[in-house]
Figure 1 (tube, rainbow, N blue to C red):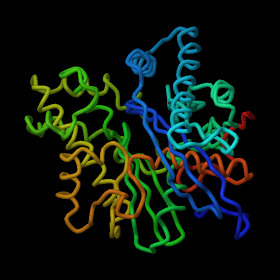
Figure 2: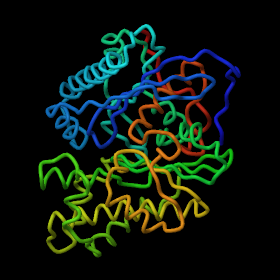
Figure 3: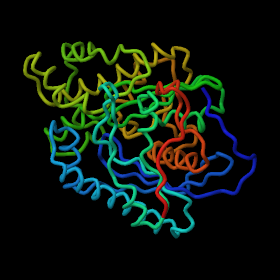
Figure 4: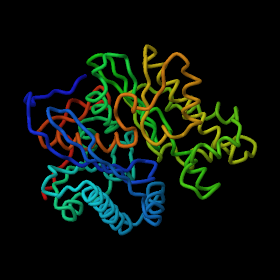
Length: 377
């Protein structure tokens, strides 16, 4: 399905900021973009690492079975203040004042994504009122829940933006975003589909934190010391999520520490290096299986997100897909590190124009919907 558009052929360019923090919880990404005639151009970008105490609090609350309401409420304000601070850093670095920005599109920080509960819910914190107050800029936020209210998974949302940016070539392309969770966008002429394939970096990052104290496996150094545990990999790939048909979405609350612990308890004791190597192979194999099952005619795989910087994971994808060129989205002129932040700036633009932002073929929603709430400056 292609998004409907009633925009005029010519229009004045507007400036937007997109704010994104994903399931890896590594940093807040801020992208300054210019949008005109539905064309999106990245003008500047910056990333701000989460303060250690906030990162730990997000990780703990997003994986806890129970939590105090006061802790969630306080964290929601603190997350919003961090988002606002990053937006102001970007403004200062760009020589832009708030009144020049049409709006901020803020994804927020996901605490829970439960598309298979009854009723399902998804929950992103980072109070948009606070961001609007701190920056003096209108904020569009809470993009996911309207799609879920319409019967959809509320994720992934970025395929709509991928379609806008990458479909013009006419080549059967797939766009792979590797964050904490990996998702695929499948582009065929005017049609777009997509879904979460499973874990990207989330399980690996957890092992690296526990083993080394580092937030992620920089340059794949830790994984290089390990070997794939075949029994562990085979057991992990039997999880029913991998064979479930789209539409589907998931998160670190499913592919969690508990999920990994159950698998590790079923095999002989293993070195952390070997576990890390196996989790990297799990990400590569589950992505490859998904692509070849649902889009075997793919002629190009473009990769974005933090995983594009993991040389081990990228090498494994290329080895498993010898007939499909695998490259960064940079090949198509889009910086892989800022694509998601750009997407939420674009989604804010659509919301303010009264245009839908979801793709029902991707999320399973009953129809196209205008996403998000608007918080005036």
